[in-house]
Amino acid sequence: MDFTISEFNLVSHVLTLGYAVMAASLIFFILTIKTNLPKYRMSSILSVVVMVSALLLLFEQQNQWVEAFGPEGTGNFSNGFRYLNWLIDVPMLLIQILFVVGIAGAAFKKYLTQFATFGVLMILTGYVGQFYEPGTEAADLVMWLVWGAVSTVFYIFVLVLITRVIKEGKANMAKSKALPLFAFILPLFYVSWTIYPIAYVMPLLPDLEFALVSQQVLYTIADIASKAIYGVILQFVSSILSQEQGYEEV
Image (cartoon, rainbow, N blue to C red; front, side):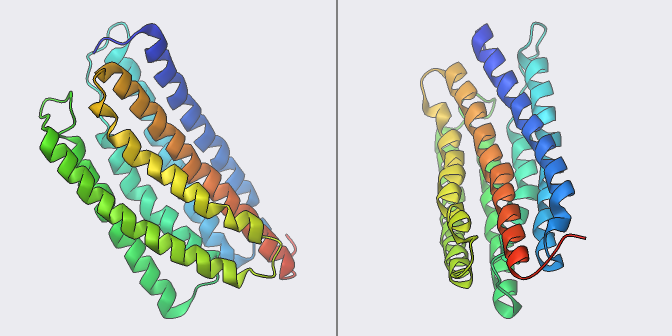
Protein backbone atom coordinates (compact mmCIF):
# COMPACT_ATOMS: atom_id res chain seq x y z
CA MET A 1 0.00 0.00 0.00
CA ASP A 2 1.14 3.53 -0.75
CA PHE A 3 0.43 5.79 2.22
CA THR A 4 1.05 9.51 2.25
CA ILE A 5 3.45 10.86 4.87
CA SER A 6 0.50 12.35 6.75
CA GLU A 7 -1.39 9.04 6.78
CA PHE A 8 1.67 7.12 7.92
CA ASN A 9 2.43 9.62 10.69
CA LEU A 10 -1.18 9.76 11.88
CA VAL A 11 -1.34 6.02 12.52
CA SER A 12 2.13 5.98 14.06
CA HIS A 13 1.22 8.85 16.40
CA VAL A 14 -2.14 7.36 17.39
CA LEU A 15 -0.60 3.99 18.19
CA THR A 16 2.08 5.72 20.24
CA LEU A 17 -0.61 7.68 22.10
CA GLY A 18 -2.42 4.41 22.70
CA TYR A 19 0.43 2.62 24.43
CA ALA A 20 1.38 5.79 26.33
CA VAL A 21 -2.15 6.00 27.73
CA MET A 22 -2.00 2.34 28.74
CA ALA A 23 1.35 2.91 30.47
CA ALA A 24 0.04 5.93 32.39
CA SER A 25 -3.14 4.06 33.33
CA LEU A 26 -1.10 1.10 34.51
CA ILE A 27 0.74 3.32 36.98
CA PHE A 28 -2.57 4.87 38.09
CA PHE A 29 -4.18 1.51 38.85
CA ILE A 30 -1.14 0.27 40.77
CA LEU A 31 -0.91 3.43 42.88
CA THR A 32 -4.64 3.65 43.68
CA ILE A 33 -5.46 0.03 44.39
CA LYS A 34 -5.33 0.52 48.17
CA THR A 35 -7.88 3.33 48.06
CA ASN A 36 -10.52 0.58 47.75
CA LEU A 37 -11.90 -2.01 50.11
CA PRO A 38 -10.36 -5.45 49.51
CA LYS A 39 -13.61 -6.73 47.96
CA TYR A 40 -13.28 -4.18 45.14
CA ARG A 41 -9.58 -4.59 44.45
CA MET A 42 -9.91 -7.44 41.97
CA SER A 43 -11.39 -4.91 39.54
CA SER A 44 -8.20 -2.84 39.75
CA ILE A 45 -6.02 -5.95 39.50
CA LEU A 46 -7.77 -6.93 36.29
CA SER A 47 -7.27 -3.39 34.99
CA VAL A 48 -3.54 -3.77 35.66
CA VAL A 49 -3.46 -6.98 33.62
CA VAL A 50 -5.44 -5.35 30.80
CA MET A 51 -3.12 -2.34 30.73
CA VAL A 52 0.00 -4.51 30.51
CA SER A 53 -1.53 -6.58 27.73
CA ALA A 54 -2.76 -3.55 25.76
CA LEU A 55 0.50 -1.64 26.29
CA LEU A 56 2.56 -4.46 24.83
CA LEU A 57 0.17 -4.95 21.93
CA LEU A 58 0.01 -1.30 20.89
CA PHE A 59 3.76 -0.92 21.27
CA GLU A 60 4.25 -3.91 18.98
CA GLN A 61 1.61 -2.64 16.53
CA GLN A 62 3.41 0.69 16.29
CA ASN A 63 6.73 -1.06 15.60
CA GLN A 64 5.11 -3.26 12.97
CA TRP A 65 3.51 -0.24 11.32
CA VAL A 66 6.90 1.47 10.99
CA GLU A 67 8.59 -1.71 9.76
CA ALA A 68 5.81 -2.41 7.25
CA PHE A 69 5.22 1.05 5.81
CA GLY A 70 8.30 3.08 6.71
CA PRO A 71 10.98 4.05 4.15
CA GLU A 72 12.29 0.49 4.00
CA GLY A 73 9.02 -1.20 4.82
CA THR A 74 7.96 -4.69 3.78
CA GLY A 75 4.24 -3.93 3.72
CA ASN A 76 3.50 -6.81 6.11
CA PHE A 77 1.02 -5.58 8.75
CA SER A 78 -1.80 -7.52 10.42
CA ASN A 79 -4.69 -6.88 12.79
CA GLY A 80 -4.45 -10.47 13.97
CA PHE A 81 -2.31 -9.46 16.94
CA ARG A 82 -5.04 -7.08 18.10
CA TYR A 83 -7.49 -9.99 18.28
CA LEU A 84 -5.09 -12.07 20.32
CA ASN A 85 -4.77 -9.12 22.70
CA TRP A 86 -8.55 -8.74 22.87
CA LEU A 87 -8.84 -12.45 23.61
CA ILE A 88 -7.06 -11.67 26.88
CA ASP A 89 -8.60 -8.28 27.58
CA VAL A 90 -12.28 -8.65 26.68
CA PRO A 91 -13.21 -11.33 29.27
CA MET A 92 -11.36 -9.38 31.97
CA LEU A 93 -13.02 -6.08 31.06
CA LEU A 94 -16.43 -7.72 31.24
CA ILE A 95 -15.76 -9.61 34.45
CA GLN A 96 -14.12 -6.79 36.40
CA ILE A 97 -17.35 -4.79 36.70
CA LEU A 98 -18.90 -7.72 38.61
CA PHE A 99 -16.57 -6.99 41.54
CA VAL A 100 -17.93 -3.45 41.81
CA VAL A 101 -21.69 -3.76 41.28
CA GLY A 102 -22.42 -5.90 44.33
CA ILE A 103 -23.50 -9.07 42.51
CA ALA A 104 -22.58 -12.23 44.44
CA GLY A 105 -23.22 -15.96 44.71
CA ALA A 106 -24.84 -17.90 41.89
CA ALA A 107 -25.66 -14.73 39.93
CA PHE A 108 -21.97 -13.72 39.96
CA LYS A 109 -20.90 -17.15 38.65
CA LYS A 110 -23.60 -17.08 35.97
CA TYR A 111 -22.60 -13.65 34.68
CA LEU A 112 -18.90 -14.55 34.84
CA THR A 113 -19.46 -17.67 32.73
CA GLN A 114 -21.65 -15.85 30.21
CA PHE A 115 -19.27 -12.90 29.87
CA ALA A 116 -16.27 -15.17 29.39
CA THR A 117 -18.07 -17.40 26.87
CA PHE A 118 -19.66 -14.70 24.71
CA GLY A 119 -16.60 -12.47 24.94
CA VAL A 120 -14.23 -15.19 23.75
CA LEU A 121 -16.57 -16.32 20.96
CA MET A 122 -16.98 -12.71 19.79
CA ILE A 123 -13.22 -12.27 19.48
CA LEU A 124 -12.46 -15.69 17.97
CA THR A 125 -15.04 -15.30 15.19
CA GLY A 126 -13.78 -11.79 14.46
CA TYR A 127 -10.23 -13.14 14.40
CA VAL A 128 -11.17 -15.69 11.75
CA GLY A 129 -12.96 -13.00 9.76
CA GLN A 130 -10.02 -10.63 9.60
CA PHE A 131 -8.05 -13.18 7.54
CA TYR A 132 -10.52 -12.57 4.68
CA GLU A 133 -10.40 -8.77 4.91
CA PRO A 134 -10.25 -6.89 1.59
CA GLY A 135 -6.68 -6.08 0.68
CA THR A 136 -5.24 -9.23 2.28
CA GLU A 137 -3.81 -12.23 0.43
CA ALA A 138 -6.85 -14.40 1.24
CA ALA A 139 -9.43 -11.64 0.69
CA ASP A 140 -12.98 -12.96 0.42
CA LEU A 141 -15.74 -10.39 0.87
CA VAL A 142 -18.48 -12.90 1.64
CA MET A 143 -16.47 -14.85 4.23
CA TRP A 144 -15.24 -11.62 5.82
CA LEU A 145 -18.78 -10.27 6.22
CA VAL A 146 -20.21 -13.60 7.40
CA TRP A 147 -17.65 -14.02 10.15
CA GLY A 148 -18.06 -10.35 11.09
CA ALA A 149 -21.83 -10.84 11.35
CA VAL A 150 -21.37 -13.92 13.58
CA SER A 151 -19.03 -11.95 15.82
CA THR A 152 -21.61 -9.15 16.00
CA VAL A 153 -24.28 -11.59 17.21
CA PHE A 154 -22.09 -12.47 20.20
CA TYR A 155 -21.47 -8.74 20.70
CA ILE A 156 -25.24 -8.19 20.98
CA PHE A 157 -25.39 -10.89 23.65
CA VAL A 158 -22.64 -9.05 25.52
CA LEU A 159 -24.56 -5.78 25.27
CA VAL A 160 -27.68 -7.39 26.73
CA LEU A 161 -25.69 -8.83 29.63
CA ILE A 162 -23.76 -5.64 30.42
CA THR A 163 -27.02 -3.68 30.37
CA ARG A 164 -28.51 -6.05 32.94
CA VAL A 165 -25.42 -5.91 35.13
CA ILE A 166 -25.30 -2.12 35.12
CA LYS A 167 -29.03 -1.96 35.85
CA GLU A 168 -28.50 -4.18 38.90
CA GLY A 169 -25.48 -2.11 39.92
CA LYS A 170 -27.47 1.12 39.71
CA ALA A 171 -30.13 -0.40 41.95
CA ASN A 172 -27.47 -1.43 44.47
CA MET A 173 -25.96 2.08 44.39
CA ALA A 174 -29.25 3.95 44.53
CA LYS A 175 -28.22 5.90 47.64
CA SER A 176 -24.55 6.30 46.74
CA LYS A 177 -22.78 9.41 45.47
CA ALA A 178 -21.08 7.08 42.98
CA LEU A 179 -24.33 6.48 41.07
CA PRO A 180 -24.02 9.29 38.45
CA LEU A 181 -20.45 8.27 37.62
CA PHE A 182 -21.36 4.60 37.49
CA ALA A 183 -24.35 5.33 35.25
CA PHE A 184 -21.97 6.88 32.69
CA ILE A 185 -20.41 3.46 32.09
CA LEU A 186 -23.34 2.19 30.01
CA PRO A 187 -23.26 4.92 27.31
CA LEU A 188 -19.46 4.73 27.34
CA PHE A 189 -19.69 0.99 26.79
CA TYR A 190 -22.22 1.30 23.99
CA VAL A 191 -20.19 3.93 22.14
CA SER A 192 -16.67 2.57 22.65
CA TRP A 193 -17.51 -1.07 21.96
CA THR A 194 -19.60 -0.22 18.89
CA ILE A 195 -16.57 1.51 17.38
CA TYR A 196 -14.97 -1.92 16.93
CA PRO A 197 -17.48 -3.33 14.40
CA ILE A 198 -17.46 0.04 12.63
CA ALA A 199 -13.67 -0.21 12.32
CA TYR A 200 -14.01 -3.82 11.14
CA VAL A 201 -16.01 -2.76 8.07
CA MET A 202 -13.77 0.18 7.14
CA PRO A 203 -12.18 -1.84 4.28
CA LEU A 204 -15.50 -1.53 2.45
CA LEU A 205 -14.36 1.97 1.56
CA PRO A 206 -13.01 2.21 -2.00
CA ASP A 207 -9.72 3.78 -0.88
CA LEU A 208 -7.92 0.93 0.93
CA GLU A 209 -5.14 3.17 2.25
CA PHE A 210 -7.65 5.55 3.84
CA ALA A 211 -9.65 2.55 5.08
CA LEU A 212 -6.66 1.01 6.86
CA VAL A 213 -5.66 4.33 8.40
CA SER A 214 -9.21 4.91 9.63
CA GLN A 215 -9.37 1.37 10.97
CA GLN A 216 -6.20 1.73 13.04
CA VAL A 217 -7.28 5.10 14.42
CA LEU A 218 -10.75 3.82 15.35
CA TYR A 219 -9.44 0.62 16.94
CA THR A 220 -7.00 2.59 19.08
CA ILE A 221 -9.59 5.16 20.16
CA ALA A 222 -11.90 2.30 21.12
CA ASP A 223 -9.11 0.62 23.09
CA ILE A 224 -8.40 3.78 25.06
CA ALA A 225 -12.07 4.36 25.87
CA SER A 226 -13.08 0.76 26.59
CA LYS A 227 -10.01 -0.12 28.64
CA ALA A 228 -8.36 2.91 30.23
CA ILE A 229 -11.31 5.29 30.66
CA TYR A 230 -13.64 2.44 31.66
CA GLY A 231 -11.15 1.15 34.22
CA VAL A 232 -10.55 4.61 35.69
CA ILE A 233 -14.29 5.12 36.16
CA LEU A 234 -14.61 1.77 37.93
CA GLN A 235 -11.68 2.72 40.14
CA PHE A 236 -13.28 6.02 41.19
CA VAL A 237 -16.65 4.34 41.75
CA SER A 238 -14.96 1.73 43.96
CA SER A 239 -13.16 4.44 45.94
CA ILE A 240 -16.39 6.34 46.58
CA LEU A 241 -18.19 3.17 47.66
CA SER A 242 -15.28 2.26 49.92
CA GLN A 243 -15.34 5.68 51.61
CA GLU A 244 -19.09 5.47 52.11
CA GLN A 245 -18.61 2.11 53.79
CA GLY A 246 -16.15 3.63 56.26
CA TYR A 247 -12.90 2.50 54.63
CA GLU A 248 -9.78 4.59 55.16
CA GLU A 249 -6.63 3.97 53.17
CA VAL A 250 -3.85 2.54 55.32
